[in-house]
Length: 110
Image (cartoon, rainbow, N blue to C red; front, side, top):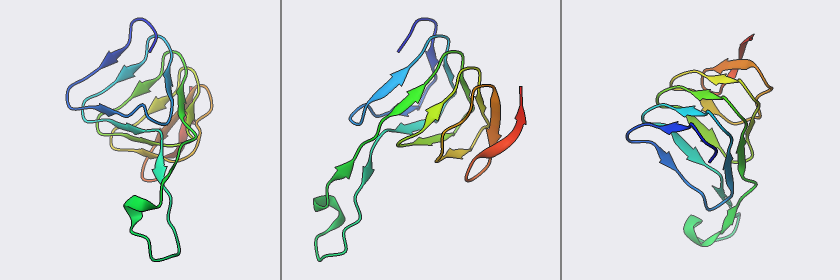
């Protein structure tokens, strides 16, 4: 995590899959960032025994993540992008893009 970042109350940031956060990033309350996911096996194993895949998450400089957002494994948030409150980000976001929704989609470019 770079300098001048803020992580507000009740946010959860997992690091086990690789999480890189640039400078000046703002993470609002109740945000969950998960840089890994469970494998879904087709055999008789329970989910917890199927292992995990981890591509990691990259958050570039000066990103703003709204309250209650969920950022999932493999996502790259480009510099100066904004994630709307309550959004679920499953795909990478270009620099300067504003995304919102479930799943998140681009609603405008800054």
